[in-house]
Amino acid sequence: MRIEENFELARFTTIGTGGPARALARPETVPELQETLRFARERDLAVATIGLGSNLLIADTGFGGLVLKLAGALAQAEIRGELLVAGGGAPNAVALHRARAAGLGGFEFACAIPGTAGGGVRMNAGAYGSDWAAILERALVVSADGAGWRTPAELGLSYRRSGLRQGQVVAEAEFRLTPRPSAEIKSIVAALQAQRKAAQPTNKRTYGSVFKNPEHELTAGRLLEACGLKGHRLGGAQISPRHANFIENADGARSEDAIALMTEARRRAWEQYGVELEHEVVFLGELELPPLAK
Image (cartoon, rainbow, N blue to C red):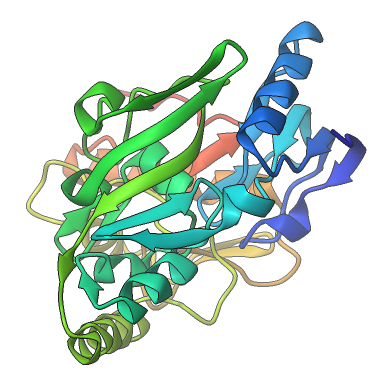
């Protein structure tokens, strides 16, 4: 495996912020992936897989470990019978295209999730009433010790989370889909994309949903809107004027600007509604939100 050192990560994230990784590798097969994970363990390096960087906030100082960007066979998707088989690094858009071409439905909701199949497993991604747990048959999880298939129950999938630990990487996922006319799939996707475009800042640089929806009558976005945070700006980052659960890179934002906005959002949600918001975006590097003053 070729290891690239001091690799700038900002261009690999949808928000466009963050510093360099100490090392980056692009494994293309399961054996290469396992070899890379052993390399990291032997050198006591933390490991992170970045996918399309769409649910990721990287520290401005960077990440002192090994970043993986799955490539080759690990980023492809194909149909086998009624199974959609996608590499961990396969973009959801590619996987959805394969399913539609084969006349298989059930993956349409993923058009609203600009990430990868493996990232979806790790966070049990979901939208518009469905999620990975609803269609996932099994996933191939690779670590420095080996590889093995796991069912959704064994993965511990729940709302926007899984039981996967650091150093465990989803190399492949199998989704059980159902026959559906391609034209119907196309129509469903078009309707969902129109709904998303109307409600979310799809033409801005963001990292997707900032906070998980709380156990409250209001969603995170509605709650933050009620707190008067739409358009609130700190540094180069602002809470989207379109949807309050998105942070936009308005003008040369840094990750610390996004953290400052998240801190303010959590403070207001707690003080005005007694709701403690939990971030959905994944932090990489030395990033954390300060505890709430309760």
